[in-house]
Image (cartoon, rainbow, N blue to C red; front, side, top):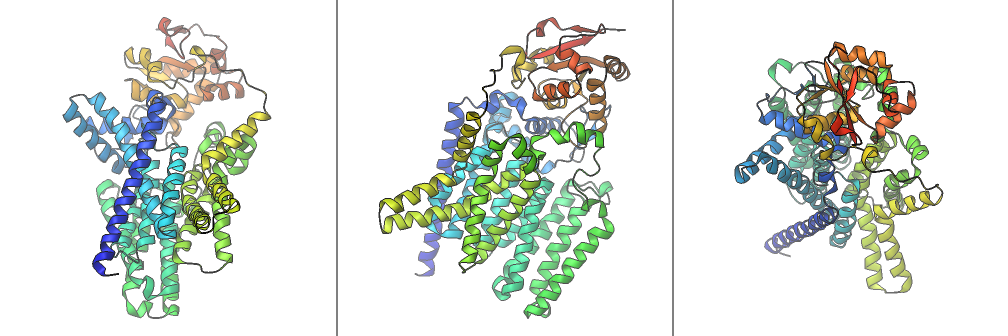
Length: 601
């Protein structure tokens, strides 16, 4: 095949992959529309997306680029969030553009709430398809589009209304993987992969294990192969180091350049990515350091030692667990009950059906990779995919949020498996080959495992009484907060799950929100809600609280009332209202009950 026809073929592949991704997106939007866009209709169940929207509004309202304070949450003066302006910027620009076209900021927000996650879904499924094509050829494209689209839909982070950073992080990680898989055929791919790895790290530290894994595999492939991977290692290192410098300059004020932060991009991450990227690029470019396998081993080992010394000597605090410094009271009261922070053992005990749904397809994919390894013929593609998959599964065993990544990484080997049985069924049609192909399809779709596990779980459970509408609703709709939004701005005492929606739908401020940096605000709210009515009154008076909000149907309200049956919160849940509070009449029987603090009460 001539170079010209080969280039035309590659362009054709790109067009077909874009079309497959677009079809998957249209199907997603159709499913969401049939359900009435549930996350847009009931947005208060997604704290992170709502607070992301609040941050964007603050930026558009004039809050400084480098000022990441959330002034309306926590104690007076707020607290500094650990999220990145790199996500706020495109969301704010999108709202500005839509506002200029529609003349309505509210409509502009709705447009962005649909367009942004849809864009991330389209890019994510496109990179899944590209990765599957590079991993197993053209026959894996259709399975990747179908199984990948189902997986991305199942994990729920691409639904209209999802503005938080998780979908962008997953998309960028998939982009980096797909580009590295294609790097031997496309020269700039490794450089762009390095940029994507840095960006996903800069947006949130949850993706650090995956960015680090990709860098380690690139280095190990270079160690084992030499010239075959030298330019890929060099370009990936240059992209990693160059992007880290730009991110550092763009998101960190000069006054904070020397401040180490372990949970967000700071001098720590800049130093590590800068040294790792530039060191890898230098080793790959310097013949004296890479001429033989022994020299590559020595050079890369020295780089690894330098990185270990850098972190161990200058930033040892970042070697601890992510929540090591969290107040023990918050760990016991709050963190241990956050679903996405649960370990696999806790999930198996609490919700075995969900454990099956989250871990079945990644485990099947790992078995497939192990069989491939045992049969020989291991390739560079296998190293990249298997390393990411294993690391993601280990992360999800520690905290279930990692399954968001492992479920999607599993699509690539599963697509190759389906493609193999499709080809066999086409080559020698028989009932056995067709059944095996059908089984491969069914086993690879995550939603089927979820449905089967839920059905099995329901068969052994006594039917629970249906939740009553109205007062027992979980307060997830925007309408639940309409009465509160109409009241004059004040400080609201409420559980942490109500913090973000109160900020998003009203002009009030709150103490609590499900964010690990809001230590003082969360502790104060828990002190008031889980203490006695006298304790609550002391907090209310000393911090000028005007409204107490109660949502009986919120799982957090029920959990804390059960843990502290004699508390102020439990009393309110039972209808025991102290004399220093008066019910807001409009909210009697409503999902969100409001109690006004009596003047001088």
